Length: 443
Image (cartoon, rainbow, N blue to C red; front, side, top):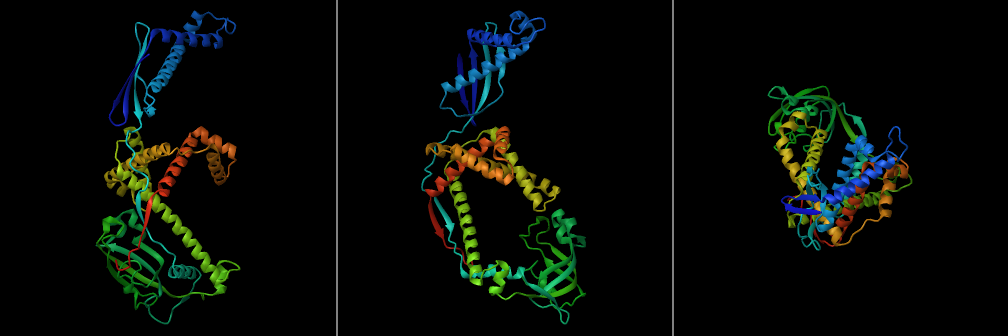
């Protein structure tokens, strides 16, 4: 067998193979023998039909089977001869030809893993914020709990004051046009509202808006104008002057429950106030720990990507870019973007999706190489344990769920992702982590 392999740019290799006539003839004889044994020909007992009759009846199927076997065997032989080449995928064979001398030739393009030198991935320097669950933070969370259990009393004998809760109806316009007409679908919730509760506080809603409510009494109306901030989420109306036609329909005062053991018992039966504070502290510490782990993971992966650059397979990049773009569009739509706004940002979204896609693929190739270098393994028992948890979450029998994953090809992805997790844990474990003091409120 004559095998020619030529490496090309961007993770591609050109493969040309010539199979000798003798090998072709032997393979055809094997296939024909199998057909003679299995084929059903009218007038002949199974396995007794002449070969010439079999070839006439099934000639096309025989030829296809011979070609399939020759191509498969040739690929295996080519990979043996080039065992250092990491082939990710094989494109459909081209120029498939049965030569006049009986030999068989074809070409194929291989998608290969990128070649790169692993950077020094042990001891990556990353910085994380120094966090501490202080008494102040615990008290702030307690206040949030109190607000959830607050009682509200109507105020009827005076006008609105600072820190009151105002209930308002409003419509908003810019230059006489409804907000949604200028800001699109995303601005629709701000165009009008009824029975909207708002605390009279300068940090609520838009700067200066609640100041305009001070002095109003229930059922009174007022026009309040505000300038939308330059960093407002809806780009189309940033920095514009908006006019709100407001009717104060109600005014309420907030009565918070006393912060005592009775209140704690309402939140967690049988718990005292000190117990409740301890529970809040534990929950906050657990959440902060998870956040710190995420920061460490993002830090080591970002640092790793900075240390080395290489091309990734174009076919993989195209597919991953589309996946990232679809995810970004979905995120945008869920955040309130209209289809028109998505179309307007299509170019920018696609560019960002390409950057995300390349970083994601680079990370996967780097983690795969690190796992191989460090001889990290995912045991079958680990995979079974993960699938068992997933089956319970999906409320399905483990065996049936396992078959579903095998049939859909997802089982390999689960194993691969578990290997990536092991490689990430290794990077974090060997990283140089320093804590940075949080910025002050003044900064």
